[in-house]
Length: 162
Image 1 (cartoon, helix red, strand yellow):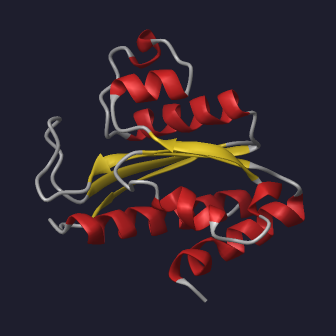
Image 2 (cartoon, rainbow, N blue to C red):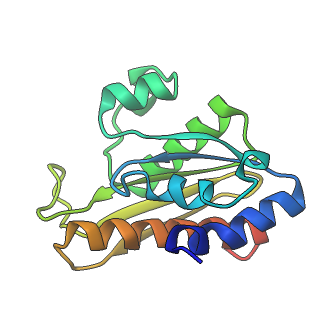
């Protein structure tokens, strides 16, 4: 089984079984969260859509949110990640959504977070958020770690274990 399909298989099966859907608003994971969810055959039954919201302009346009939605909210925080998830869930009318924001590396971000910092929020019938610090400056390694952490949080939340 390919790595992406392996990462998304149990979540895909769970969402299909429950008849629920998901949307994705990711940033520093660079599309790996969506890719894992879409690598599962039959993903159209649960995947409503998503995007890599790497700039303020893409975030506002792709989620159809006015700039003031994020006023006084610093990116790369749990609050911000959860707001991304809520925006994606509302805009795409999904049962669940995940929002991810962080600093993949090799340097930190302009907000003072070190490389390897990520915040992930899941929004749905139940919300959950986490912050993860890998301590690594390896950009690709961090992207994969962020995606795996997001997928784990999605599964735990959908199962009611988060």
